[in-house]
Length: 327
Image 1 (cartoon, rainbow, N blue to C red):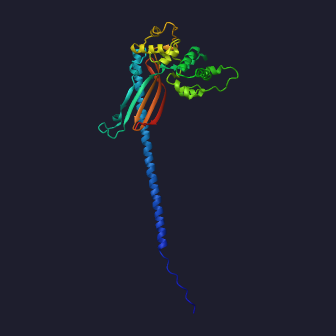
Image 2 (image 1 turned 90 degrees about the horizontal axis):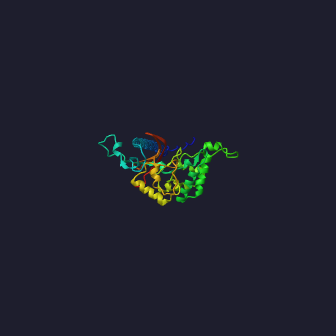
């Protein structure tokens, strides 16, 4: 008889239970990962929507602030006369809370974000206009001399004035087209804003010192003697020192100059007759600054406007966003 083969013991269920448990853990991990990913995407979408809504609200309110400033400048133009620092447009708007205006329900403003608006209108013709350096396709010598004097006053090398004049002349389309043979076929771009003057090779440190006293406007403009600082007055009025310029500032604080003749009467006898293209008492170009603080976000808008008669036209607009670091 054949010997019977030994019978194999039945398979233990332990490995099967271990595999099932491992598979269940993998499935739970995948589900948890997907759930976390969905929650994160939803949270991210809410944050993006909230930021976009805040940006739209800020832009809307700053546009309203610009319209408010245009109304003020229009009303000022209706009265006519000289422009000076005692007029309503020269009074800055201190930071005011606007949170209640953002709430849909005026009776429920506890959850409304904290919004604060401030702003100011600045006379751009209180500064020396660098556009004056080029006149009729050539450098204007009286204006170049004025800029040299200004550079000396604010401790900037006089060569900066010469370089600015040469750079603006080379970048002016009419002057570039009439340049001599052998000149660069690709003249530098003509700067439209002050921060673009670095294109002409001017050092940032020199531009930083000049920034409070110079501007870059689209057309030639005189300096408003009713709003210009003493440094600019001493630069654009020949033979005028800083002491005499300071006296002019004190005189206009009591009684603003109404005509260039009023300015001339306050100058030393050695001062030549004022050039109407360099010094005046009215302004056509203003800078409007608006600042909105919404929660921990700050949005600033700088606009340049031109006033012709009672018409006020925005020429440029720039917005800068940042974080409020005061807290």
